[in-house]
Image 1 (cartoon, rainbow, N blue to C red):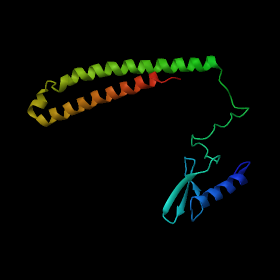
Image 2: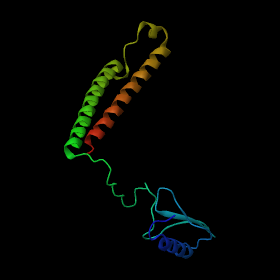
Image 3: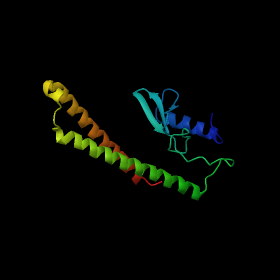
Image 4: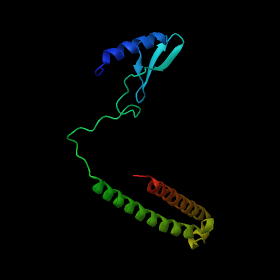
Length: 153
């Protein structure tokens, strides 16, 4: 169950659980370095200094890369990053163009109604709603692309 030094951890865990007033066996809370145990007053959470942290929780030390694991040289990674940046920039330009078109069609919430929409006002309201949603979608896409482009890689 525990790696090297696991018996020491188990002893520390048992001692810490007693110290915290646990009435039952402590269990590791998934994704954290905390333990949970029942007490007379309810449930208690605690950590064990130097205790094990679940793999993948992000709070422990990173595992070493295996020796046979393929590595990417800096030039290759830079090339990939440049391609990624170019793709994102192209997507940003496309989204900006689509946003401009959507704003023109939306006409600040008052596009001219079509002949059919003049006869059925509900259709006009539905079209204005769709146009507003389209503008909003493109604005959100642009915001996300700008955020991604600003992220350091």
